[in-house]
Image (cartoon, rainbow over all chains, first blue to last red):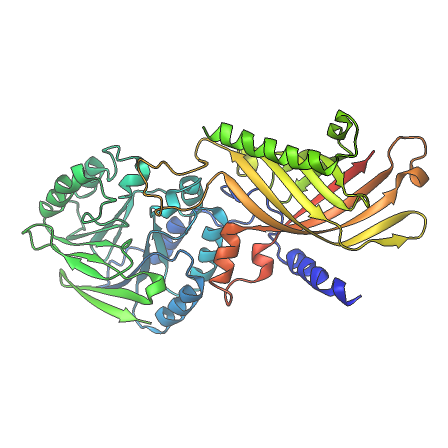
Length: 266
Length: 201
């Protein structure tokens, strides 16, 4: 009877998981999947009106790096004064619901609220729909501590270089002067120094940021290795964080309209 | 092009099936031996199929299923599946049936949806960029099955047997995630459940 132990054990493991009935790896939601994570977490974050030291974490490319994500979560939870965490795209490798659920399960253990930004891998298969249901819109913004964070889709290749990704008119509208906002930070997955960024839109994109008073930095992931570059002479820094798999993130601190950046290995 | 590739794969599987049944003198081998209805199991909210008993001992399984996932369940998806499996052990349950505790199998699913391609567009993506197929998915499965003797229980119905099976399956996506993250993911995370009913004629 020993031969039956293995299959029975596997069967028990299957049944013990409450989410075991699957209709397709390509389904975009199921009964138990998370909904509107970004909106829920931003509500928890609040507007930080009285916070004069804004500290947040930039990470990205959690694809296939769940073990690292668990250690990342522990590390962040030990750090004092972190207001929020941004996962700048490539939550998944294959753009499927199950990967989004697994990563959200790990990130749910973060003490600070987190938001996710769409990455190119997240747009494969039916990832766009799964992401929208689970996290929210691909372009969105929020204000914290007088700083407007503009999160957006720069995955031009997945949109067939259609000339509308990134959506520059939307970015312009988001960065109009606004009461209670003194600074701006842009966050997206693909940086404008990548071949995956629509080459026809690079200048319009960087010029737009350069023209915004109080624009502090453009933050990205995708390349998997840390980079700092200046695409023009505006002095605006463009940062790329190392990937989750490379076990390093970026701590960003904004005090008195000035941003500082620190690479932190974990 | 995707459809024609898929079609030729399907024909190849049929031919393999055909050679396994050379003993049949005419096209009788095309008549399925089983009818299948399945709930979940990663090949549809519900799927229906035709099955063939392989080998002399009839413990080999060759199934072709069509499955549907409605929009209200995370679709809309149309899925076709070809499965091979083998009932490794057979335990007789007195007069009324048999129990097959361990049925390992392999299946290929193809999902029809405008956003799922057989292969990523080579004009936009270098062959190394995304190296998998969105629409074609290889799966590994483990099932068990209880078979009730129809001649005893359903006299004169023409149904030789009725069986109920439960099947756990995983796929390449989940296995890659699992093997790279064994401390965070467990087998219960990557194996997905389906249950089915098989009528044997």
